[in-house]
Image (cartoon, rainbow, N blue to C red; front, top):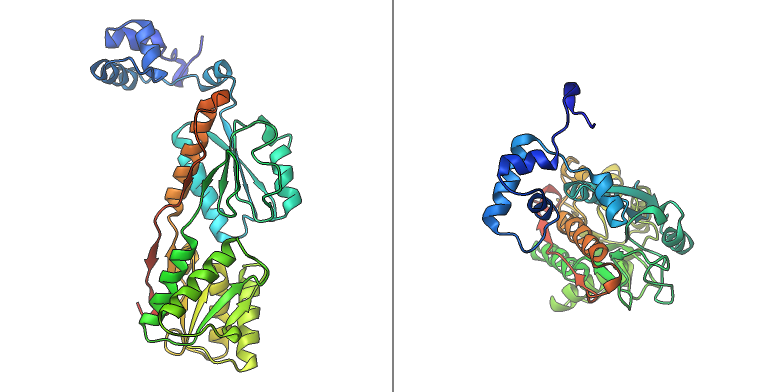
Length: 345
């Protein structure tokens, strides 16, 4: 017999049924979300669950349903603050549904992203959330192992795959417009990918360009600074290189906060005041940006909503099983500008 704290017998479904004054089957129907249960009965059973302190046997339930109760999350690098915070949000949301999250790092490399789809450890999971950087439209999607798959970010793949993305282009335009609205006219874009056509960098560049064109300003190639890997050291190095070249700017829109934080260091080392000489804008709203001096103005992309939508989509796919009744879905949560000291907020 299972026991609870201090050796007492753990409450059972029959205890719940007795307290609620209903049958064992009715309790089972309520706990398995059977649709044909009256709301008054459901409320009475759930109150009895709380009253007796019943805890469902999740292992038995998952075994009965042929599931593990574990989902996978594959991200490029946990050393990048955005992905670390995204993983934290996914784990929190999944825990609300009694799910465990197994996290893998791919380095953003196509080969390792493909491996994540076939990894023997991840094959034990009920489904996978994948944030790809290297996969192309020619790669095998959905997951060849047959597990449900939800893609986070870009690019959008064809076929029966759910996507949770961001409003990259609209958010980048809003960020650039914020800088232009401050009277800045030499806005540098930090983090461009010269050869990219459909990914995150290309979309954010498009938003930047749209804002300049709407303001009647040309895109100055000297102000579009390529940075392949979006981390702090590369942001600092790129900014130092631009400052050393003599290119004039009065604002910087960095493609992510890590680049912005690195750029902030180089600006301050060279006596460039922020926001006096140069207004600085990031993207992602990572926690560190709140505590820099000056604090970092940024785009909050709806990270919590992204995590919740991704987990919800995946669990719905898992429940859908082999029926394939769900059509492919794409969602992009709302973003917001977070104005702080680095642009005079």
